[in-house]
Each structure stands twice: as structure tokens, then as C-alpha cells.
Length: 216
Ligand code: O7E
Image 1 (cartoon, rainbow, N blue to C red):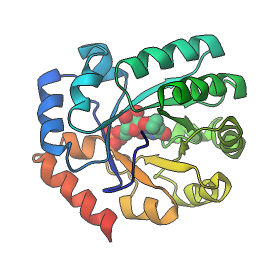
Image 2 (cartoon, rainbow, N blue to C red):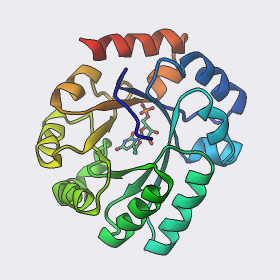
Image 3 (spheres, helix red, strand yellow):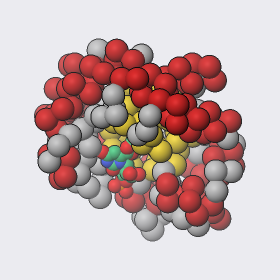
């Protein structure tokens, strides 16, 4: 199953309390296109949290998989068996490692997204200089999409041009300073928002506000 762009909003569920995560998912699941889980929630709640969140919406496993092809394949298989609809991997490990994720995803009917340039300042140290090569690598490996920064809309637009019809998921909106509407205008298909939603006094209202901005 592929994750469709409807609200264009993906919530980064980086809370570590299972009850809090499920309460947010129950309230927001119907309004967002997916929930992204990362290590904080899986390390605190276990891999089973994927299945629990999945009852509310699609789940993307942001494990930034970065190993040799065989290990990547094993990680992907366990993640898909747990119910994830998509997995995120790193591209700097090389084409064969990304290919292993793509092959596993095809077997399970799931999706793979490859990190290109990240949203934080440290991405300028190494990643930015190779971001377009990582886009090409993701495309050549047959990935469904890539990750590109909402914090640098001009870079996002450049990456969009190179990405062809691959989907772009864009983190860095809100707390990191990126703007949701600008990211979509620059070419993102989805924005990823974490703290600005789950730390808001009313996460439901905060999500609605982002969805409203994304509609314009
Ligand atoms: O800053 P927040 O709270 O809105 O959270 C952003 C989320 O996106 C968080 O889970 C972080 O790990 C992730 N992220 C980035 O912030 N920047 C990136 O460049 C990449 C990611 C990410 O999600 O990578 C895979 C999609």
C-alpha cells in the first residue's frame, strides 16, 4: 500500500510514553497521512508500538537504516512484519544497501524513503555536498521517495528538480524553523512535524492549524 498525500501532514511521534502516544494517535490519526516512529518511541515501548499505532493511520518506521545489504534486509523484514507501511534508510552506505531495502519493501508491498540532505545545521558538514548524488542513488535503486529539508526551501526546490516523480517527505517544520506552506511550494509532498504538535497545549488544534496552512 502506498501512503497517499491527503492532508500532506505526517506527525513525528517522538514521545516515549506509550499512553501519551496512543492518546495523540487516537485524536490525530484520522487527520494525518501517517505517523512516523523513530528510535525514542520504539526503544521505550518496543516494536509492537507500530501495530498499535497502525490502527489509527499509516506508520512510517524512521530507522534511518545504514548497514550492509544483508543486515538492512533483515531490519526491513522485521519492521514490515511488525506492520510498518514504509521504512526510511540512509543512502550514504551505497546503492547495494539501499537496494536491499527496496527489494525487501517490494516483497512486502511497502515503501522505502532515502535520506538526502538533513534539516539540522550539521547537515552542512558532509551531507549537503552529496545530497544530489543521494537523490540519484535513491532513484537508481527504485526507492519510492526521499527526505529533504524544510529548513532550506531553496535546497528543497533544487532536490525536487532532481527527484523526478519520487515523493518528498520534508522534516524541520515548526520547532526547527521551517514553514509548512513554503516546503510544499518548494516541492515537498508531505511535511513532517513533531514537537510543534505533540508539545502543543492542544495537539489536535496544532495539527489542524498545520493542515489549514497546507491546504492554502
Ligand atoms: O523537529 P521536530 O520535533 O518537528 O521533529 C522532526 C522529526 O523529523 C524528528 O523525528 C527527526 O528525527 C526527523 N528528521 C529531522 O528532523 N530532520 C531530518 O533531516 C530528517 C528527519 C527524519 O525524519 O528523517 C527521516 C524522515
